[in-house]
Amino acid sequence: MSKRLFKSLIQHPSPSSPSPSARAQRKETSSTSMESINVLKGYGKLNSAEAQTPHHHRGSKRPLILAVTVSSIVLLTITLGLLIGALVRESSTEGSEAQSLRSSSAQSIRAVCSVTQHQDSCFTSITSLNSSVEPDPEAIFEVSLRVCVNEVSNVSLFVRDLVKSSNDARSKGALGDCAGLLEDAASRLRDSVAAMEVAGLGEKALTELKISNIQTWVSAAMTDQETCLDGLEEMGSTVLEMVRDRLSRSREFMSNSLAICAQMSAVLEKFEMGMH
Image (cartoon, rainbow, N blue to C red; front, side):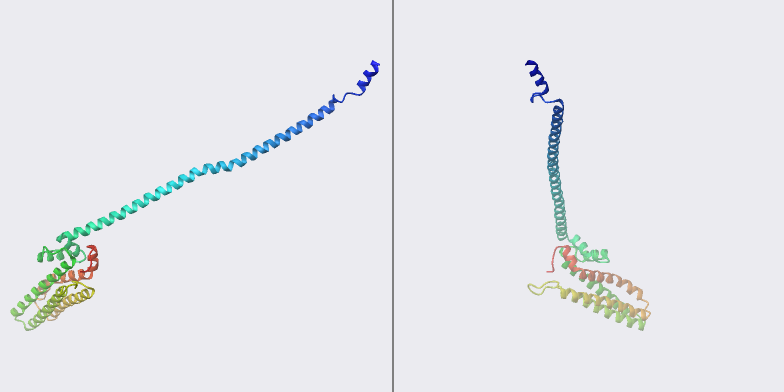
């Protein structure tokens, strides 16, 4: 009986002891399953890394954006500060310049004469007549007109003396006409001075109408002088050059007054003043 049982066990193996081929198949199946699991785990790690990467980049960009923003604000603040400082300095400089002009007669006269073609003669003629003139453009302009009146009147008297001493009838007549023209020129210049006188309370020394009238009168006075010289030249007067030399100063003075009158608005602006 024991021999039969032994044969039976050999012919019918126990199910708990698998055959070598079965064990190999299970091992292969187990290996495949492990590989699948590893692949899935690796895929999960990859997805996790990919998902974290953008967050990492976004996080790293935030300090950069903040730094750029702060730098821009600082730069803008500095620029605005410099601009405001420059404007304040410019305003302060202009204000101090105007104050300086109004505090000195000499500086005021030079500032007014700066708009003329003959600045030196403008300054010396005004200071010689009134060195302590009020540092006011309108007052200085009035003195320049008085300078013209005095000079033209003096030349007119000089020509009258030539008329008396002349022996040439033709030259005598031309000199007489010249003297009359110069007297007319002096009268026009006196009208200009009178126009600046303030008659009543609230009246301005200069207005647009007064400026226009003064320009007309001074221009007419200059024309009278040229007409005087033209007459002497036509008559072939021997004193033509003598009279021309005497008139050269009055021509310069009237040219100065005409320039100041034409630029009065700009001159007043330099003094930070208006017409009064």
